[in-house]
Length: 432
Image (cartoon, rainbow, N blue to C red; front, side, top):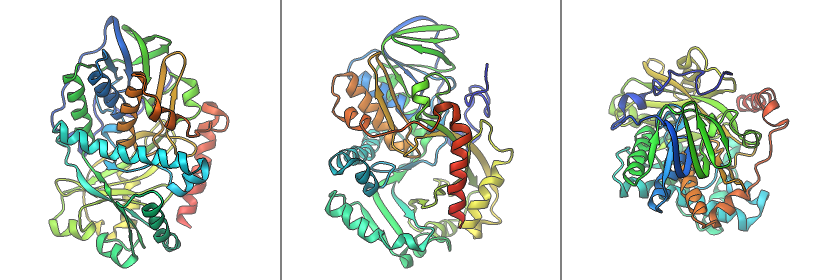
């Protein structure tokens, strides 16, 4: 079998050696799929997209199964920065220039509803995942400050979105204790959570609603009405590809538009309360304006969780801690003596223009993926939208599927050599 991201870096059936796995609550095991099975809908991937699809379809009365090559939340859903965004991954003025105001507004409203949905599910089903409000966007270049107050005013007036506010540089230095940043924004409709606890919480609700989850069930082929693993064949009227960065070669048309990249996170030793407040005064999560973005927050047990650095090969670097320590100390030099207790990597999926890729084909195969770093809220929402589409309510799916997601130059065959060159160029610009 060719090398795959499903088995290139991690132990079979084991969650990544992350702080999330070490601190997770309520992880349970599910059986593998075996023999001939029949469902209304078969979902491939037990991350946020797949679990949300299963939950919402089960609530609508469909017989649903979810198949995962490893465990619930094993992929990016259980390893990411835990940052809940709002809207789409592309800034609204850029999206408007791409597709026009009406479509941009419709897509933005779906993204706002996505953040609301995350909070609604947490509250309604009592998912214990330490949700906390507030997401700061910090500028690493002073020139970015110039247009941001005008952008915030535009979001208030044109999009009726009042959760976002301008943070001037002097206030940013009080909120985020780093010499690396100038001004930025605060969005109170966003927040952060424990992503693995959120994923396992969604799984619990889905199963309680009637869905079946099969772990250690690696899908080897997908065709109209049929999904195969090594030991099972599942017949299904509809099939949802919720694989994101771990799609591999299951579907060539999606792979032409959705590319996996690896990202890395560390967790420091627990820090004193006063140190935590000096780093992020009010406990929001933070992401910065670099193309290769840094993102960070304080955990429930006072660790700095810091994400930074990417690569585009199948293999993670040998010493992830060293990879992430470099950008962490650039942002927070005061952490130079802090011990790193956990370091891990994961694979997300990006599209060429950072917009998610939604597709509903005539053969009954549906794809929802390519969240480009906005997966906590948009993957959750994608699952609900896919469920609605299967139930005949296509309005939101049509809006999302009409957003352009161009093929990578050369498609899947050439994306590995070409995209790293492009992203290396942008990373160099970040440093200049």
